[in-house]
Length: 375
Image 1 (cartoon, rainbow, N blue to C red):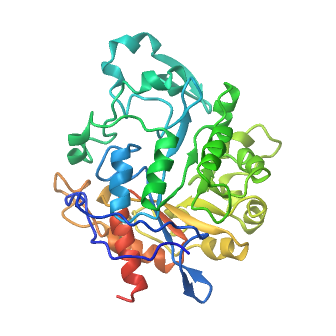
Image 2 (image 1 turned 90 degrees about the horizontal axis):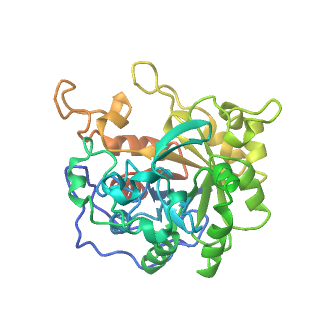
């Protein structure tokens, strides 16, 4: 069974987490969490890029805060270094999340590459050894949205997968890694999947009962993983009508919209444990920003035995449906002010999603625990 839920005080971007909070030590091992009765299960709380509402994303600082706030899982996005060490960055280009532009010794490595069909200019993890990346320091990706987080710029290195696994196991939480750009990294001889499985096996995580979900927007790598691991796999599905990158060259490739039909979900169920989707696939948003009627996606997925995890839950008005925004729209700080994220979470939990990915895992945990207690 997963660790027993505990009460956590909701926090907002204006209320930083209490550093004195003690982490839980129980290890979650079940397919999601405690049963609720009637076949339902307690939805998991995944710390999106760590507690990225409070600390620069994908740093040990961010993951540590997420654990203190009650996350069941921490989410590292994985890319590779030149020497094939897996590190956590949302993308392999480093400009937005590190101080690399201020390192003159690396100026000559700035270049332009084509990544998944798009041209990107900057500095890329695969052009640096781990030792070189260790000289960089992380910074807040969204300084205007989260100015308080900029106080931690320069205080953390880029973490390795190894460090993240050790941190998770020390505190009894799981990990929810995303394989970034799998076709691209395989094409340059730095595939993510092998080192990921090897690291997890070395630390005793290699079974469906272990607290690991592996996610990817591509389909082929998940199908290959299904044949070599029993770890749980999550098929990520984009919000638009595009096609997963690895399927673009297929004859009559399915779109993301096709993947969420009953027929598409049936195919996914052959290799994955669940799907990861945007909240708009659960509750569509109209042109006025307000919510429409829920879709049948959760029920359709459950019919095929698939879990449904939704992303991304953020506290700020700019990231919430209009129904849950609060304050004066004319105010200067309105867009980054906290809205009624607790109401939005309660709505999603009420639709029986199996997990949420949240920038503020503390509020996601508190709302879930309150609903569990019937409050």
